[in-house]
Length: 457
Image 1 (spheres, helix red, strand yellow):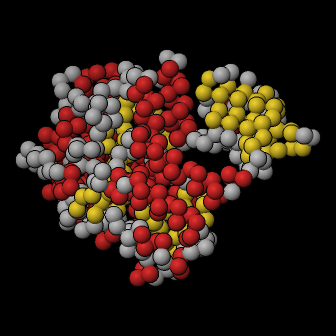
Image 2: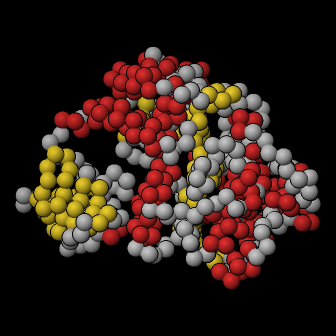
Image 3: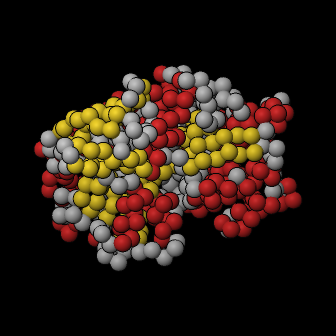
């Protein structure tokens, strides 16, 4: 069960794939690429072999020209995406992007619903790993193995069925307020958290995102260890159990609301620290490592444009462009070096706990362990569950917030894109489809601020 990998100065844990020796001279590089190398202080020699990596099968370019555009739903900020695709647009100016940064609900659930109805809202989507089985069951994903640079992906960085490939690496550990915490006091192992009493009683905040860190520790240390760890973490350490997203928790660490937040992505913490915020990133051993996935919808309308883009994206140039845009460590095996790590001293030489987040059986078993302890810690296990019929008097923030009347009182509650089960006329829908005037059966814990289930008509 254990999957611990030792990381050296170069992360050879994922293997190296030899590349052709073709060079990439400055005169051959797009201006955007030269600017990126200057911005990141990276040597041009890193792009050795790029010409070979950019080769695609005969006919793809002409077909991509005819398609003329490409739609992508992902999580990059629009500014980051524009920076990322700068070199690509210089090389392939005939492909125009329709890009949207989308929530999980809009990016994943809405996309799958549309596909089942015979509609396409995107060609490429990312970050759908935890819902992979739903796409696989619907036969909604294209086989990616014919993309030339797919061969560069190390073991574990792509789907055995070839339906998704690694977009980027994510190291998930903890952020901490550097004004309030001395680095020497931070836990060296995950077990140390259970005995570091200075961080007891609300000094640590934990998000309900177990697939980002505990799933990896489950793979590395086993079910009995995780069950014991989370029980003592919630019962003895008594962290704040927060419903905010991981990025919001980093902001609250910076604000001093608590000392430590778990889990936090290294690249995102680095974005704050580079701006002078009092925040650092620390990782007990082993270091949880996740890979974010990218896939195409089957028979997507701009399939060849998607293939040309993804082949470029997997190249050294594409991965360096992504690193420059958002700080994400590259997935390209020859770029897994210290230069691309935001906090290299927290990773290099440490044991790595790697687990694919599409491992549905382990995720299910982990949830069985985690959810009762989480609910007990938040008090949700003691709340009375109520169900009532109500008319939606107001729908705000594209369905994220609704207002109804219940027992003569105005009640406002949230609709989560991932936690609230939502159906309309018996079909699973995204919250953006909620409309004022709909009649819904609402299920929620008494006094809660978020619905567990909405069944509308």
